[in-house]
Image 1 (tube, rainbow, N blue to C red):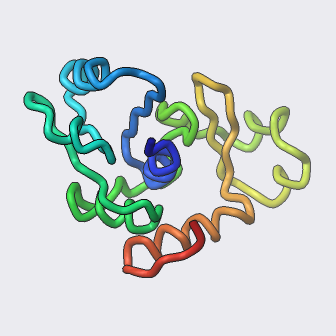
Image 2 (image 1 turned 30 degrees about the vertical axis):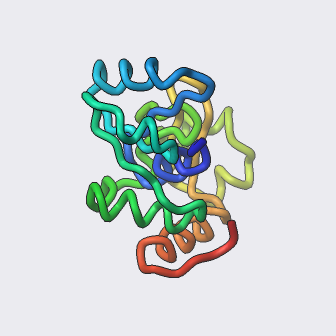
Length: 147
């Protein structure tokens, strides 16, 4: 129910596990086993004993981000530190290491590259990154944007 929020939290540097389609019991067991806080919009799950939960009130992404930051503090200092898809810490690559995997234009215009060792996605701060940063800044400073 909060998959979009999970992806954005990863982009911000939070260690964010997300599992869709599992039972509340499985969520609680995983949270206990991994010492995680459960973010949920499910009242019954939020009131469950034996796990730490944050009930996310808003349905608006920027407001959800603000709720998480208010509850847990600022994100990690390196936003590109986690894969937005699978949450694994990214590995920094040299331009030479990234060369076979990124378009030539990107290789010529960027100097920092990252790779997910699990899903093999490659990351760099492309033109979209400024829009991501702007949306995160709006979320952190109280503005709302597109849903």
